[in-house]
Length: 413
Image (cartoon, rainbow, N blue to C red; front, side, top):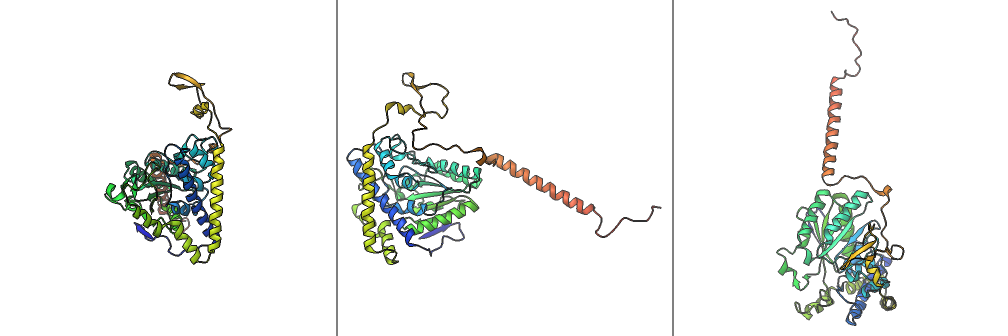
């Protein structure tokens, strides 16, 4: 279940599981799986266009981690982001509307499958690996604000060889940032198996100077325990790397059938032996936390609920054309936006109508915490000050009279 690198110990092997937590995690995994089924259907009917990356088979990673993340924690991930978007707080209807490109979407239909956001969730990013240094920056913000939060920066095995990831590792370690780097290893970067693209596929050891933890990403309880362990470590010691070993049943994206570089038998074998939902369902039944009839009814209710929410999105329409030029700048210094034919578009702001608004950080929440070179200079100044205090203290004690001795009454000769 776990493999440790540069760690004295790992997460506990024994966990507590209540009926409420079990049904919550089971419900979330089934909801995510059903939403992706609807996304697949809408894409094939050409209502969803552009890029669309599904999460089928990887549900335990997002659901398990969210069970231990707190309200003060942040998440940033790559383009396979539907599950994370929903679990971080965006309703199913808003997500489907965004995929359809209509105004009811969480990004007003202008972001699509790869660019969805909400409070403490920074996307959905379309550039391979680019979210990792951004995640280090979010972790720096947590340290700067002193809010006690950590940032979870997720990437795939296909992005694990990116140079910017190692740069982010280095900076995070130097600054001791509260960042949890998570490699969601589904073993295929697009159509290339991981052992054909990476000289070393033990991604949890890639941090070198940072500790790492390998986790069975298809066991939701293992993911939950590993997340709790990683949060506690990051807050006390700084960054850590997690590798979640999982599997995707579908292709890299909707344009990829997913069987030209692997066999149907391979996919079917994983479905039968390592499916995160089926495996957790068996655990729930074995622990007598629910009956077969209860889970079957729950499955039916989830299917109806998710399907109904997705259908609501079909009633919305696209944003008007002029909204494409809205909110280009937070503070526009000119009245016009430059287009192909010059400054011909009026700049408008939709802060009052857009469902997701940026929240300015109040000045009272901003702590003056030095970082980078300033942090090293501050540390050197503090060390110099303490050294001076120690010298002054030792000089004062050596020159002072012994305790109990008063002034001499003898006159000098």
